[in-house]
Image (tube, rainbow, N blue to C red):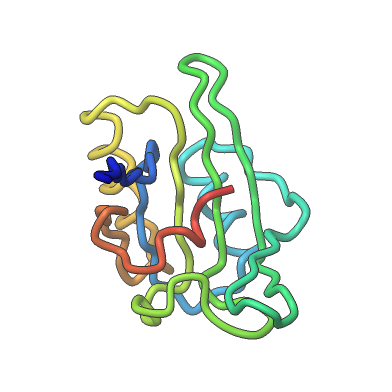
Length: 141
């Protein structure tokens, strides 16, 4: 008797752009500067709750949100270091992540990264490919 065996493979849809930000400032202070220099309006949201290790307590990460009405684009400013660990452990040098969901034009993205790097308190802002991050599941919310 021959049984047909089928395997189900799925790929996580990473439909967002990720920018890693390095700075020594606290989350509320850097969001204030981004709001000032880039004319954003980040506001504090409930902390992001992530189950990093199965069977252990969830880890909480600071989260800010902003919505661009013109293009229906959502921006999330997320702390990489949480209450008990890192959101993306392989990128410990990144203090924060700016996640952009929905659509952003490539020119607008380049202008955004350039503008972030012009803020004196930001050491570096670099676009990251989410597909190359091992712990990318932590970024899905």
